[in-house]
Length: 237
Image (cartoon, rainbow, N blue to C red; front, side, top):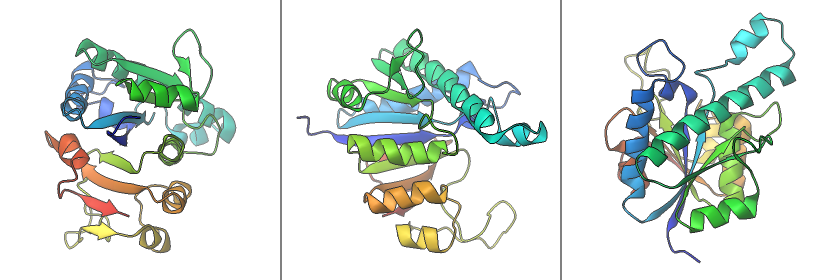
């Protein structure tokens, strides 16, 4: 049994798209891979990653097309698998052994998600990227993060935000007087409807005693800092 701390890093799909108007910007993906490798190289952590799919497919587009929710969600799940493969390749090009595991079976492309196999991969020192969401429509990649964390026994989710440095009492982009919370309880997040993650995910974290650290991933070194528990962003526990 390894004594390393097991973490889940949650990335938004948009984080992979960079400044260019392209779904996946290879330079941006490489930068993110370098940031993750920096935390991995400390030798203190077993790292699982969940990446969203919003850079490729958005629910909004689906509703505009009058598309049925389940179909739209499956398309979103496939988008997260595309992102998982991009990130896997970037990490492997840096010499980090990485496995993409998917909840939708695409055996030609990635290993199917099997809990014991995922834990075994982590214990062997691989980074594991979980693609395909929970495998069910109506659940977000936030919920996937909470679910996978509970399943593999990770007690911390690093919620890497694209340009937001924590949780505020109101939207900091539109309110100059918005105040950032240093710490919150899961109860406060649910009670006050704070938009950290959706309520299903927040409830799962609360029930399984999983700490969430919300921070800005666009500042170099922040993934490593968050992993080490330095005071950045907002801590929810």
